[in-house]
Length: 443
Image (cartoon, rainbow, N blue to C red; front, top):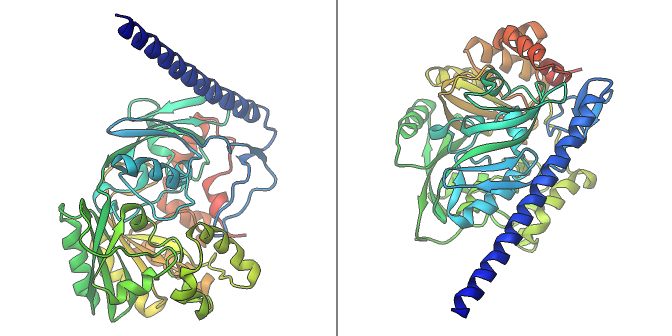
């Protein structure tokens, strides 16, 4: 009897500790929200996020009121279908939390610096987009602070116009404070097979075939020129059947897929296979820095700091005026590639099929192919090429991710996007943020 009494006391103590912790978390969340609400309500000018910056040269809004969202970085809760996080938490942190538990995000962007709120505002995808669409399509609801300081919960049934209107508008309708995102089960390993082709017709035909195959888990690729096309087909695996590859501080991924037939990864290492070399950026750094023996001597934890330090060492590539993700409908992929190979001919080009089914105000649905152009590759005619690419994109009923510079005029821009709906949303939700065109236009 005494034994059971002691057990009950211990359980009571644990429950009390648990509820005290939960209460402190709720108090912290409420405190952060009240503080940012106060900042928004007291703003005397256009509102932007403090320390907000963009990798690819989008304008920084200096003459603005800057609100501090830096503390919105917590993982809040998880169940077997979804995870709830704050908008400023990095996707890398959430993946490191989920994968040991046997779960993964529906969509897994492959750059470790990205945040949940940022990638919804700017839209993104990854090698599972051929099955699950773009990142924002796995969001089930979010809390957003709008221009008058109100915090709204948005979902398909609450403030649905804002739920479907906010993605791809770069925070110009409000800033996401927290969100709930779909997750799924995963395996500890990934095996990839590298399929090589020598012409565009066979390549894009194979891409469409694999895109319809529900037995594969990942699909993307690289075009190295008009005679070398690589598709990378990935599968989750419960057991390791080959030697693990290391693309963090050893081999270079964009080189390896040209030569090797298959690779084996731990799941997290698969996700960040492109991260160290920022896709193809290492093509332009001194050859000795790509030496495998030297790379092996660099601790993996130092890689992010070394990448940040490279510009100060005189190793930099200015790709602000050319980097872009151009999404073209499947039935026009070869038309775009044929034109691109003749008129631009800048390689490598990253390839990622993306299936979108949800109807969002500033995102086109359908089967699309992402042409990742200028990922670390400098060209001599950046501005001219960007203008030509955007013109061809519009002609072929394509769309681009808005995290990079645009050379379109405002009139051309609003031919693609629904200005009437956008301005209606800005008025209804008291937007005191820059307009989306202000944030992407070139000075």
